[in-house]
Amino acid sequence: MKCIFCGSDTKVTDKRESPEGTRRRRECLKCKKRFTTYEKPERKQIIIIKKDKRREAFSIEKIKSGIIKACEKRPISIEKIDKIIENIEEKLRKKGKEVRSEDIGKMVMNKLKKLDKVAYIRFASVYKDFKDISDFKNEVKGL
Ligand SMILES: [Zn+2]
Image (cartoon, rainbow, N blue to C red; front, side, top):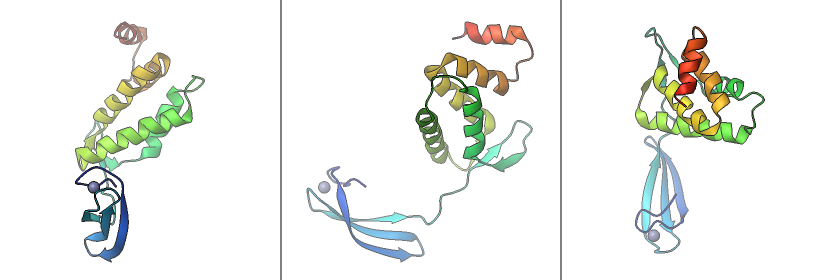
């Protein structure tokens, strides 16, 4: 945690559990100012709204397996995939409680597009449910 006054590193001088969460007293290593932070005891759950309006709990594993499948035999390290997932999860948590599955699909596609065209097309073909070769051609044209 960075100092809220000057942005430097801080140390925790006191830690206490309270009903609001974990309360920490911090002191800036540089400007020596003190402040308090509260950390909520649990991360809020994200709900996915599917195309058919059904709802299900957000599963990072599900997204990960989809991306790994798309990246099979491509020169993409698992670290890169993890980074994509981390980034998406962070965005989702900022977005709020309910997220449409389409939005997640789009986020993944945007990431893969920059990373690897083949992985992108593979993911898009599953996600967009390509019906025939003309769908593929249209997608490739858009690259
Ligand atoms: Zn400071």
